[in-house]
Length: 185
Image (cartoon, rainbow, N blue to C red; front, side, top):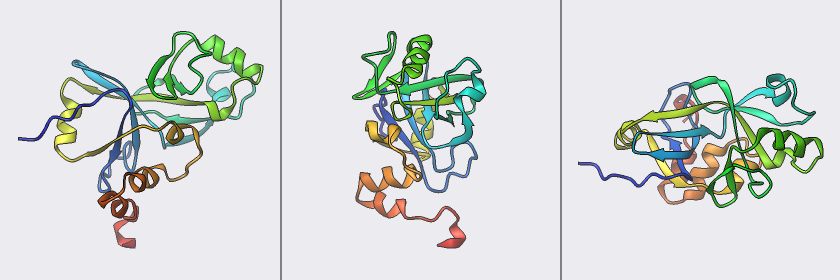
């Protein structure tokens, strides 16, 4: 019988290297909510080559790339940020990482240049798991777990999957070096 893992907001899910599912291949997912009836998270490392103004016409001019948060509700926009003390109704996920909050306040703070692209990350859709589903995936070896550090979300890192595994150390450093395509091994 597999050991039950204590998943909580701030847990990172790192896709095992041979997960070839298009939505989650080499993904790093931040869990923002975990309750008995399910979990919610956002893929941190899948940019979709769009700017926030392309999705929200009323958004001020802002050079913030948008990311694929996951395959659920891809007609919705979500965001994490590191300015929770400035944004009412935001939820602290882990030290230096907040989820949501007053969107009009965010637009105001962006327009006044208080919030910069390095303070916020936008997502289209989210990743979601029903009751017990995430634990089943962990038991099956689909995910490697780690803790979230704010720099994973807000510093530019074109290969976050490898960087997180390498930072975890030990055998994970070796796993981080596995090529994206096994033929290149």
